[in-house]
Image (spheres, rainbow, N blue to C red):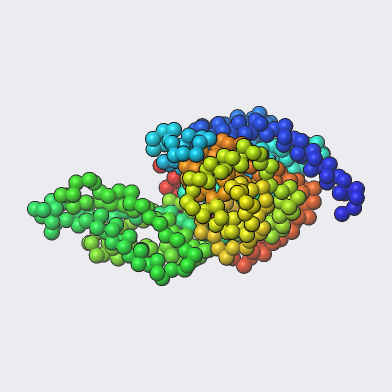
Length: 479
């Protein structure tokens, strides 16, 4: 890079940073406001409204009820140039209500919801990145269509898969997103494909003591299915996962043979084909349970997500940005609160977390501003509907440190840190990382060309079939 080009790049980075710093306080307030109204899958009405208000304030053109989903929203600015999209989420989790800013379990509302995965920060930072990129491009006289897509129901609802199904990403050139973490770094494309389905058994009621021979227990069928699936675990790939929850026991009276019962399953596999093979085996076990109990069974797919498809072009750009920008600049108060949280965690969890990320742990450190080295994991064990987007358009994800090392996801400890200074610093830094990577794509469009070439090659080897293609009962309609 010539000295002139380098100076121009540094000027652009400096401009972006000044715009980011000016906007940051309003967006930290937005994150806190979303934290205050934790809502579950497809019920994020207040959260979506808060994001809409910010999009209007930032002069985006807003589309509500995106793809017919009441809590999905899109903001867009620009008419020509590449389409750069930032993905945001704002759904919470059940049973994780927690007072903010304290290191002890104390619910705000007994049995209430809480942002135990940091999605109050996630959507906010993605929207901030979109706003910062939009204003930076205007100052530099560069053209692009900048989008923010507010995606509901990541926690099991697979909203992005339905958005892909409805063509929302058909004209997008690149998608960027992030996730709150204890570490800053690239998120490697290693998630599992998954689907969620309900199995419903129908039997025949009878008096359990007077005429047990007349009954056909649907609850027995559910229990036998679960036993069968548990035996299946020995004979499925090591990276596969199966989970279940009984959603209908058929009643609470033990002297009645239960005439109906239902169980909900999540089936995960390393790839979509592997996941469908495993799901077929689970379905056969359900059929066997029905045969054993002389009941009938039907199944209904609820959601589905593809495994992440990597894009080395975008990943290399994000890696360059990470090394140049470093991690968040935490202060003494952040380190002190992280230490308090760490004392509530299982012994050794902090050391294990540092070791898993191949980072040395400084003496007494419970929070880190270091950038974690890239680690090409053989396969992750979680799933995300970002995976489905990655098959539709070149996609890249990063992580930014927002909470104490060792904090488990989906925990009260994470909720307690959701409005902290480290949460604010982390989400602002995540916006910086995404905006800088996106700026480079607009400044140097050859990277987008190469990213799309790689994407087409991968799809040529493995054609994509959206895992929710055949889902007919739309979850936001029945939720």
